[in-house]
Image (cartoon, rainbow, N blue to C red; front, side):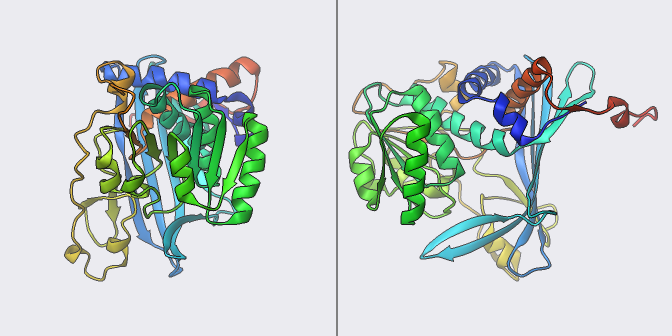
Length: 366
């Protein structure tokens, strides 16, 4: 069994590879050659009043290569109001001020565990690559300006990914903090070899760019509906950055998967599930049963990304059509595809540390 770390994964994984293995995996999903178990989150009270504990997991299996991946996170989470914007922070509470996120890879032929590695680098790559893959099929070919809202790790990955599927002349970035957007612009200009301009005016970014990406830690709206105009393509890393009014303003909507949000299981609610990205109201309520359940969004029956990638659905029909990709929830199939690619490359290059597979096997019938 192979053990890898994030530094090794960063040397192995490229955005080009990520986009291509996801393209292949989505085609398998569309053709019934892959299986995906939706994400679930389990919440427990945290000893500190400023946070909650969350255990997140998702999994999937592929026919080619024959693997199954389990992705899990063990997190302490806090939500804060920062200048009228609700943001979500994962607190590094593990020893050494670190986080816990793992991918376990198994053979679907023998059942044996193949590898275990952290999910951090793969996490950024797989989200951005999925959004960029949607843009490959949905954005106009003649776009020139990319607009990014956010200056964190997801925003960085999205700039790199989108520059792989379209040829841009310029990138504009808006972030509420001046120092953050300026630092981001300098770093990304060197990485993608394009002019990257920091902007203090979010609306200016929307006006000048034909592709808009919301990649922030905000759980409140970033792109309002009035910014949706003919020919534009826009996306998000979570639905709250757009909101239903913005999403339904688009002429064509494609979603990642026909699940509203993660299935949350919250202490005090028994086995009842709540579908929401951030179930703050349920976590804070004394009477959790009295909290209104989230409504089914109007876009839930839109085509899914795997059907667009496979050609079963169209991503764009005309130049003046406004298109939206809703990256509404992650899929285990992303970790199966990307994780397998990392594992095979690591084996080929002799990277990582081997430990006896026997440690993880048993002679007692389970």
